[in-house]
Image: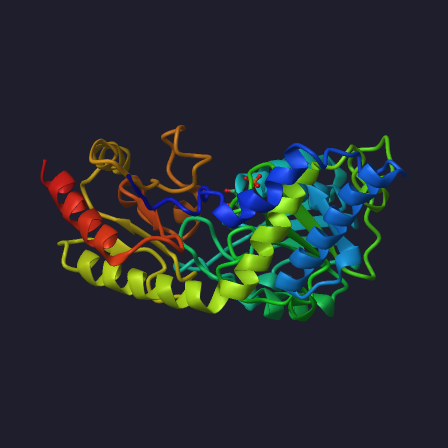
Length: 367
Ligand SMILES: Cc1ncc(COP(=O)(O)O)c(C=O)c1O
């Protein structure tokens, strides 16, 4: 199979699997237990916390492990205070559905409009009547188009109004270097399974001067920020995946950019094909495109018959048949949006796979 859907999930790296295995058998202690078996598990979590912190230039003490990006986003929005909450119009469902859920807690819940490339202009921030303590949630990289938002500039702009900025960095993690400290945000969400780690694990990163309230209670795990016995195996895997991502970041980026350039050159020869956010700053692994008059879901199924896995957009909206809210927010015409296909490359894809994909795509369009 040719797997080109790495923004949906990635295969666990063999080295990650190897690091995790002992914690599934011999080292099964509860990290809260005081005896040796417990202390072994505790120190494995501490190491993983350092590994994740190192990847994003954060302080390990300010990282809380969660069950994934969705929970990290939910925990972040549960900590929205002030009278207003604003989110960009192209956020993941785990942001906009949680924001909706908290709507009654706020005087205003505002959607921040993006331009045709998906970029959030700083000027549009001035349309909101911010008050000190409000929250804005703006993702670092978009899961569909790969668009990279200038979160540092947004956080700087909003810090003057005393607004707390959260960023969903789930898709940016491991694909581009960034520093939590330099971005200047108060909260950041991460996920393990997008970086060759196990599923069901993620983290929320909390700035030193932000007081986090827990969403679930019943134990003092994770500094009291997230009660419940830790998923030691997955946390160890996340840590190892983060360590590998840090060590291999430069190589992975170069390799994926090379493959994406090859892919885009071939795509441009297909009549009428449109690459979304083509000229904007994007993740090196992501390209989303539309072909007028073609049904994206149908194309996806034809590619699947040829043993090629791609997505029509976000995995979460793939089954609903609705037009992608991300493309809608960018002003993409509904029929073109319905033709969308997202290719997201991974560290182990190669040129032959790209060429085979392009051949299969052309054949699938033809019949
Ligand atoms: C941008 C973004 N945020 C959050 C999530 C949710 O992460 P998880 O699958 O770890 O819950 C995803 C997953 O696709 C995502 O792409």
